[in-house]
Image 1: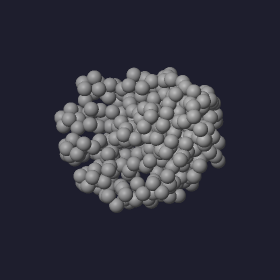
Image 2: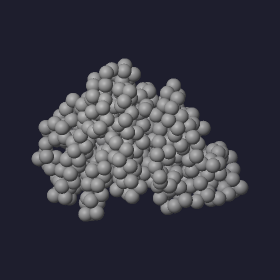
Image 3: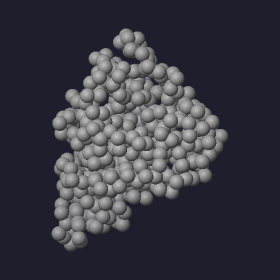
Image 4: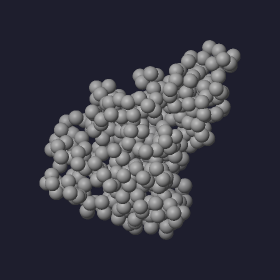
Amino acid sequence: MNQYLIQGGTVIDPTGERRADVLVRDGVVAAVDEHLGESPDAGGATVIDAAGCVVSPGFVDLHTHLREPGKEEAETIETGSRAAAKGGYTCVVAMPNTDPTQDCVSVVEFVRKQGEAAGLCDVRPSGSITVGRAGTQLTPFAELAEAGVRIFTDDGSGVQDPLLMRRAFEYALDLDIVLAQHCEVARLTEGAVMHEGHCCSTFGLPGWPSIAEELMVYRDIELVRLTGAPVHILHLSTAGSVELVRRAKADGLPVTAEATPHHISLTDELLAGYSALYKVNPPLRTMADVEAVRGGLADGTIDAIATDHAPHAPETKEQPLDQAPPGMLGLETALGVGLASLEMSVAEVVAALSWKPAAIAGVADTHGRPIAPGEPANLTIFDPNETWEVIPATLASKSKNTPFVGVELKGKTKHTLLHGAPTVLDGNPQR
């Protein structure tokens, strides 16, 4: 019998906050009480010290690039899963821009099985909206949904054809799946490397206008209004996009949205050094945009914090800014960035990392659950007050392209349990 007594922590879950010990037995929560260490039921249990820590449902990432198959030099499903576990994640949604694309059952099943073999977190493959993410032909939604795919996205590219997107919404409504849109009108971003504004003019770099994102956010919200199908907006980055989503929710439309750790903490001014570490899609915006995104998270307009974890091999990020690929690591730093950057309670940040994204991803039956007897023991234990800085050599990810070196973060994962078994203890992966 595998038993763990998580002792001395503060439990935060969808039901509220309380001081309690948690007994885990054979993959599920067996008991939750303030003094379980004195109970005979906990006899023989391995003690996990949670003093000064929060015990919460495991985090769920709606937006993870695991690169496998096709770009294993940057990340594999195993290394990405290990990074996820170190960051407190028990479930991640794997983005489909792999090679080959996750547009058929065979590739989706490969990703799922690789995640199961790693055994570090629950890897849920997404499917692409269009074949090869080429934007011209819809993927076999029904077959992929039957194989367990819940979220469909061409992430990395927005679906440019509005008629094709309308048809996708109509299928999605029938199949009870969610379309997640990368909002970018590509014609407006050709050649761009950073946000269009004062800084890009000063630095002499081609600019990426906010309207390129906002036009597609507006279009898809109106398609939701027309079809009744839900949409999830990926990585909101502009004040205008936040306001569009706020109005859509006020109208009662089934629209959800996410924000990344870097869009709540970093601005376009950081491109002054021309470092590709700060190149990301959508680009870092102004402080006014950052404050709007923070406000959207605080008032519930934006539902979730999602990492957009995008590993790249070092030699690719060392290229000139216009040639380097966009993207940053995020899994191991999301909690620390969130608690350091947001004027939200710990419970509100945990909600945006755990049960809110779990509901969007369709995994709320096993992740983001209340911590109560009989519930699955997918849990995260973190110190919300520990300050720390990133040391690239200690990252579990195969790549090291993080912009947070030298930045003080707040909040550090100590232990992570998946199906009742530790994947991380005292910050160290167990597999």
